Length: 126
Image (cartoon, rainbow, N blue to C red):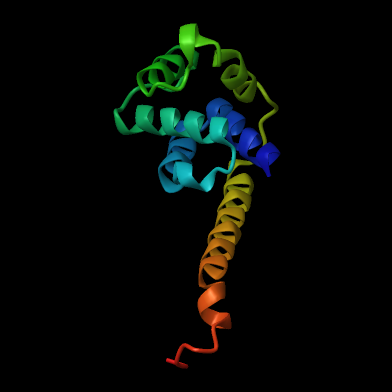
């Protein structure tokens, strides 16, 4: 899963059609990302698009710093930069995979939260 997240981030970053990649950035919530670093990077890129700023290494690093995700003296930047430099893949397929996995995790969490209620015989059938 995390490999799909990293591939999507790299693909959006390097995608030649910026309007398509920006559309995906606005469609997918950072909550869809299971990896913390991936979610932070997605948030930074999404904030740049919403503010009308370009997405490049400089602006991403500034956005991550503003959001407080770079750590002391920017120690986490190499990890984020590695995510930007992976081979690019078709963004729509990757976005769909991430959406599907998020939906599975969300439904699993909902079922787990209701498991007690479903198994408690003292509750009414309503």
